[in-house]
Image (cartoon, rainbow, N blue to C red; front, side, top):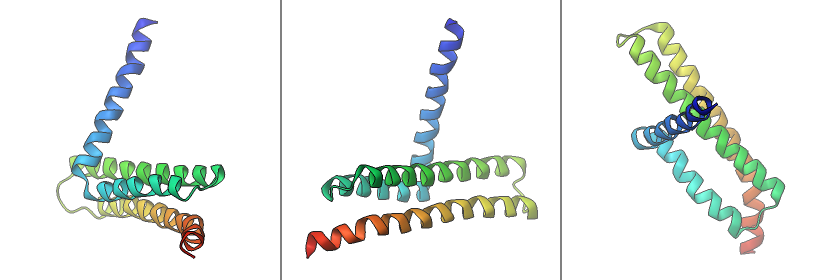
Length: 123
């Protein structure tokens, strides 16, 4: 039982290490983190609803998770081959597309939530 608990605790350690690696070495992840740092206080300032807050939280989680998966795929692909490879290039492009799709969806959701509230606040 102790070994199981220790392994679970260590799994958090590796995940936190991955988070630090993601945000310290990947510029696109840093941009997404900056957007998160802006959006969270803005959510409180504009007093979005609980439902809207859940949508914002899920969008943040989706985009950051996709960025992490994209970075992981890039690391694995670079480990497999440093040379140009058509299939590895396609895998990297598709992983990057996943990040872009999620970021666009998050931007649309954010616009639908925040723009009307900003307009009301400044009208």
